[in-house]
Length: 85
Image (cartoon, rainbow, N blue to C red; front, side):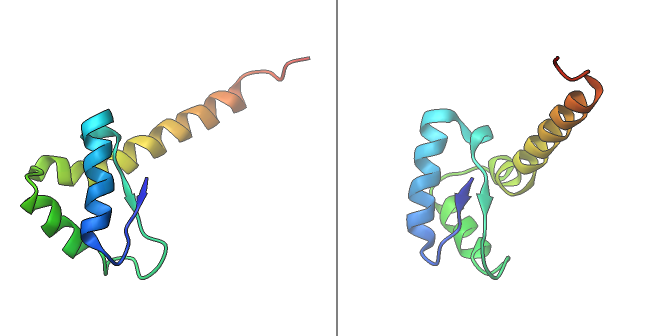
């Protein structure tokens, strides 16, 4: 997860590196303060840099949802397995 900062270009630089090295499906964003204020300028910057609408949907929602599903699966799996003796 990449933290959205007040400087959309700086955040976009980090996301571009993640996208280039690991692929867009591995990128996600989070905001520690004022949830929505930094997303619009960031997404405008990413669109300007050539990110597709599908990549932005993944960045905003799908990647976080996928990660949470995986975490929930592991938590349930650990509850079902008997504890090691």
